[in-house]
Image (cartoon, rainbow, N blue to C red; front, side, top):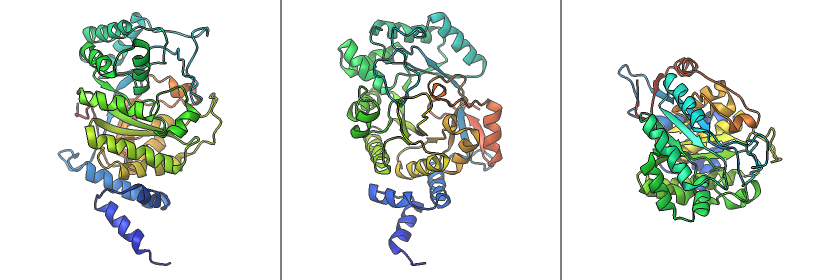
Length: 363
């Protein structure tokens, strides 16, 4: 075997916790999976140096929340989505307040602390409808954090309401919005976005929403859906744009990536498996050096790979997902309980703790 001094130097650089560039990321991507995983695990430990319980065990977190999709009506027709409907479809809906209350009450009964509320890009719901929705939830369930409305929804709101983002987000926050999910990130490369979701917010729009939200005091997550028409270079560019935004605003609480789920969608692309998922997540943990948390994506990969991902850079197992509709419409229907979460975490020698949206421990 020929000694590669440059690679050896790069590996040491990663081990020591230093920032890498795009070219170095692509070099790391070709490492054996186990070796890349070990580097990501090292970076997880560096990022989470204080995340230990009183007995010296490393902490891995999870959250109990529920996805509530307030409407499935959407006018952007993303090729990778099997959830959306048009207004004329027989199964199109807008949630009623009674149904919403029932779902939140069930969530609280199961120990939930948050709802993730997202929907399609409905062309006719007014700004007041959304403000009433938020105010209703906050007044009836003040203990619940409303983690709601992806950046692409806010770009849609800007067009429909004909108002600046700052005004819309500020009004939503005043009505009860607590944080923003990173949905609709897909790949933050416009060439890719124009192929998979040409009517959706482009990369600069998505990042602008996050920048405004962070400046207004709302934290958010960041996501990446990969394994469709993008290249590895596109994935790294996506990470670079997230890292630059985090350097500016420091508002992202976590990064979550998952693979494209092809069933029942119009996007014809070769999907990728668990090895590619673990490799990409590991690289993200190394590249996103200013992100404190990385969530495992068991919802798309299944509980076993979700558990393995905790050795590939993730420090959080995400949500038990009391309800999930979008990914399941594309053919993936994994489920977990709190007991399942705790067992998977303990099996790796970690200590499970429930958290809130801001990664504060609840037990």
